[in-house]
Structure formats: structure tokens, C-alpha cells
Length: 389
Image 1: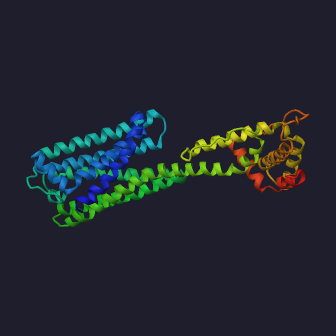
Image 2 (image 1 turned 60 degrees about the horizontal axis):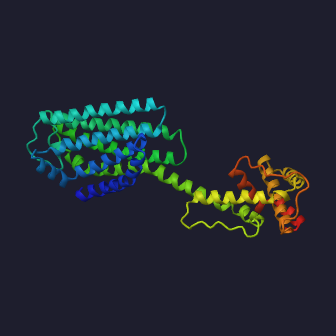
Image 3 (image 1 turned 180 degrees about the horizontal axis):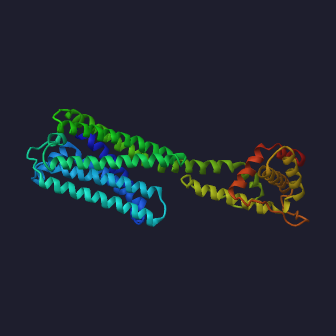
């Protein structure tokens, strides 16, 4: 892999981080958001400092041969800890328990980072190695221990992530489950990275040469694993947001028949609320529901409770359940009231009985059922024919 293969993923992480920073500024106390930002920052740093051109530059600027090795190992170790902390905060639970587990992971991996620095300081690595440091110094006192320690720490994090994500994926559904499965796949590549690195290092310990596994096979596995894992963290958030947005627009469209039906009930001269094309879908739904309820108020004097009861009985007789029958009855009463209101353009008719109101205890769900019944219920169509709608 050349520098471009490292810098492109680093740039992708930087772009993702740029989108998250404004949210962090406004809600910096959110542990989940802080964990996401830490993960993206460390992932970008790992790719940036693991690139051979950066390794050479850091060694040259620092004046210490191979100082990039412990730097990259420490970043990888910190990234492993950030993944575990993010998973703990993502899954949630009691605040004290979540904070306690996160703190223990951070403390444990902080000890590993300190040990990596100490082992490098104790060892000697005079020959600069940009791509095969792991295998070249595998048998060097202290340096070899540093290499083994960072690989072990990375392996532990990968195994824990696979186990946690897989178990959690069996307990949830939807986009969260998809994201967890993607994370598992990404960490399988990380496990493959650990396996190739360890195989090459152990081969050196036993006097064999499998350096190609570490130099050429492991880096692409690590890059692919990190990108797939990052996608796993992002997919549930993005796709759930898109799914919610789609559901909101679907609600807006499904309220259309009822909204159009009650428009006639608005008094003449009532200004129509026109929303800008860029208005949020949530605001459009709220406005449409408000218009419908205003229409119900204007239709109130024309609602016929007896007609509603009859339509309810007809719907039940046709096999409708309680909720559907109630929505059909309300829709039939609305259709008849619209006809009565049209026949009284000056609004002179005042109901002799007490004013009747629609039962919409379930809020938007009832409005959706009524809207659907207006267009599809045979009972409502029969009422339309009877009253001449």
C-alpha cells in the first residue's frame, strides 16, 4: 500500500468528523457523541500516521529513528479503546454502570500505551524500517515485546467487539441490527489483520520468514476493516434518519385524502397557508393535521352521530375490527358533513342536537385511519351515494 491508500480513508474520517463537530459544540456533554468524535479522530490519525510517507517525515522531524512505530502503535491502541467505549455508550444503560465500564477500558488501554512507550525507550531500533518494522525487530529485546503487546491489545479489542456486537445484534432489529452486523464483518477483517501480523512475527521467533504476510497482506486488511467498521457505526444513524424522514413524508401523503375532504369546510375568505418548498416534512405534517382539525371544528354543527353509529355497525357487520370500524364511522360522518356544509354555503344550519366531535384519542394514527377509510371503505362510498356526495 502507498500513501494514497492511507490518506484517502483518513480524509473520509476527517469529513465525517467535520459534520460531527458542530453537534459536539452544542451538546458536548453527550458521552455517545464524544465517543463518536474520539473514534473518528483516532481513526483518521491512525491512517495518517501509518502511511509510509508520514512515518518517514515523523522520524525525520523528531530526529529519533523509528519513533513513528510506537506512535502508530499507541494510536492503534487508543483507537481500539475508543471503539470499546463507543460500544458501551451506544448500547446505553444506567449512567453509573456505563461510565464505570468506559473508565475501566480507558484505564486499561492507557496502561498499555504507557507500556508501549517504555518498551520502545528501553529497546534499540537503529535501522529505519518504513514497512516491515514488526517483523524486522520481532526478535529485538523490548522492541519485540512492544510489538507483541500492541498486537495483543488490538486482538483483545477485536474479539470483544465481535462478541459484543454479535450478541447485541441477536437482541435488536432494523437498522441497528444491520449496523452491528456490518461492525462484526469489519472486525473480522481486523482479526484477520491480527492473525497475519502475529503469524509473521511468530515465524520470525521460530526462525522462519513469512514477512510478506505482515508487509503486504496485513495493511489492506486493516484498512478495509476500519472502513467497514466505520460504516457500521454510521449506517444505523443515517439510515434510521432517512427511514424516519420517509415515514414522515408518507404520513403527509396519507393524510391527503382527509385534508382535501375537509378543505371545503373552511369559511369563505379564509387564507390558505402556503409553506415554502424547503419547509421541513415535520412542519408540513403538523400544518396538515392543524388544517384537518380546523376543518373538523367548522364541520362540527353538521356531524350526524346517528349516521356515524350506523356506519360503525355496517363496518362491524363486514368484519372490521374495532379501530377500523371506528375510523370508517368517523370518515362516513365527515363525508356526510362535507355534503351538508356544501348545501349550506352561508352557514345557516345549526345542529339541533348537541355538537358532535370526532374521537381521535390516538392522534395522528386515527387521522390516518380516517383518511384511508375515506378513499377505500365501501361503507363510506355507500354513505356518499346516499347523501349525494
